[in-house]
Length: 302
Image (tube, rainbow, N blue to C red; front, side, top):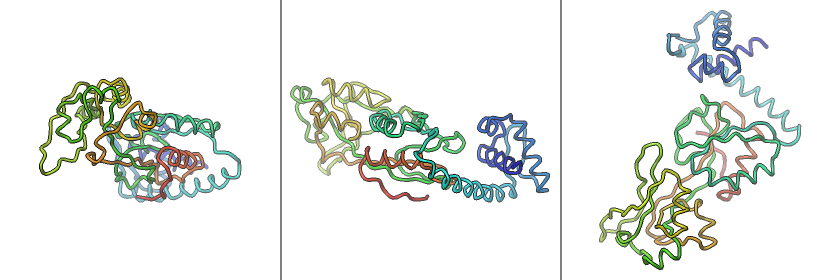
């Protein structure tokens, strides 16, 4: 068991590239991690890390050993998974990172909490690119394509953009039919919090049209304020359909120019490829996919 503990310390240090971070993840000091790896290197008769005052990097032998250790722990987790599936309902802490628009998923997440009360959710909302492994997340929900061989991914569902405004707003300003009509409207814009750039509206510009500069009356780095302002007739906004689905269904917002909006996107959930899809993650993925976007897609490896 001492050897298994040393292997665990080695894997955490190798993935974090830091004895200090590995110690925090395992609840021990960085010196304890260093000593465990030194003992491991002594038994193996090779150096696993190049060490400097600031960083550690794997030696060629360390890289080979890391892959074998990942397979070992994957088998251990598979065995634990088989046993845990016989013990009843999924339980334990589930640490999930969501984009800032994840606040709009809260009705679905709240329903999940009521259905699976023994699962403790630890939710982190951010638009920055988190490192799933180094930061200790069980899973991460993000948009777009993911290219990281360390991760498994499953598509949760897709979304489209809609131009929306209130009945009173369109009664006062008219209903736009082309992108050129937007010059006469009050546009509520989204700013990417990670870059500070305004998000372009994905409008189809036909051959006989020219791109227009949108008259911006308000900018927000979060989507919820844009929904709020649009509902109160302060302007027209271009938002993901899942963000305004309820408002469109109840009639507080109306979707216009649907044939003129071309962009769509996807949400994916990702988790470390070295880990089995545990019961708590599996039920979370299934529930979110079925209730947020419709039928879940097949799980795939990248």
